[in-house]
Length: 343
Image 1 (cartoon, rainbow, N blue to C red):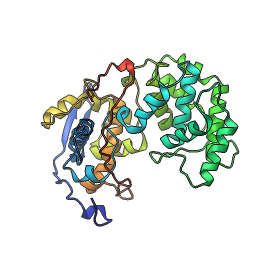
Image 2: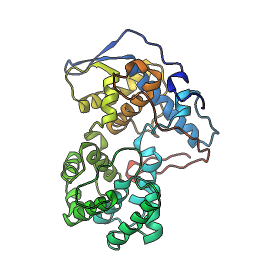
Image 3: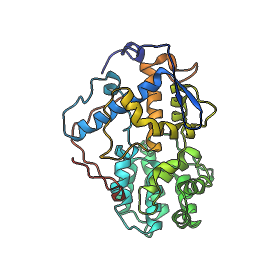
């Protein structure tokens, strides 16, 4: 959709009902919702419908919602996103499956989180394995690409640089991975007893804060290296925290992780309450990681549809425009999930 550069003039904001709603949780805590909380569930149902319509090969547009048609939003299920799909199929499960190999390939990909960077390294270095990887050659390849003006990192989130003294960020990240391998991080991850243990181990390395350590733990858990249930642990990122603040006027003193757990358990009854038909991922219900992502996405969505929910000084625009790719896509998930996509 084209038009004025001011998003507020492109769309009709959602109505502003004044009533709030109280949700009593087991144990007696009461959450007080805002109108954005209903939008959270409507957004989830619409975005998942777009996913299935696109998967079926239907031509765009896949929704009548003007915001979804105009701006880029991640999928409801994190593992369904384009980059996650590439990671699962082309990185994690495409190569040697020893613990050090899976860990190395996963972290090398995720430190840049950009398909084009991975494919550049493959094209210049050949198949990427821990046993054959040459850090100096990789650094030279990335350095040349950077000098030529090519982007090396995804714009999805900020990747802070570890401070190892190199002038270039990519050099510092390669050094971080080298040090993790020298520290036997793959063996330590494989020996972890919980997903939280994996998070805490990753969190102990330079520049990997709470958000990145959690995201990387989830990525490693897609592999056969780990066998943890995604529902056992969650960490709210900055976008999710903002989304939670917009959805609730009172959180009864609960932490963001507790809010995400509670909302995950409420999913079925909230969809029913609003009369929404939500299509699960071939029987896989929403997990906390997915609800965490949804809070981040509804934070963005509400900037247009609920401008009144944005606090003073908060972001009021959605940066990334959506461009439809009508080519049908196929999806492939970790075999241990036992999902059977029909398209």
